[in-house]
Image 1 (tube, rainbow, N blue to C red):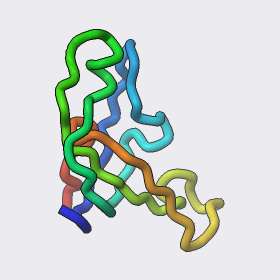
Image 2: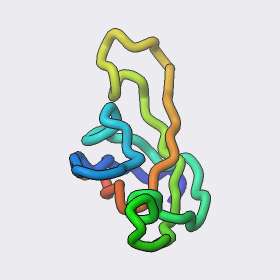
Image 3: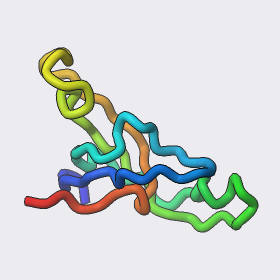
Image 4: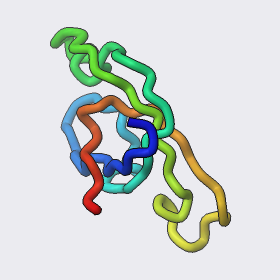
Length: 89
């Protein structure tokens, strides 16, 4: 749900993925819910569309790039549900 804290799974597949390395293992918050979309990772390998809900996740720039990031700067990125885990409290 919007506002929920999530962590991007820190996986390193050998094939196609739409998860940028700089967000893997990082904590963000659900900003928008787009609904189901074709899952590019399986579709790119001819394994079917396997639709999944896509979430727009907002990250604090300091979470991604450390203390040298601009204050109050954020980055939002669309990620499929299977890339995300609920963040620990």
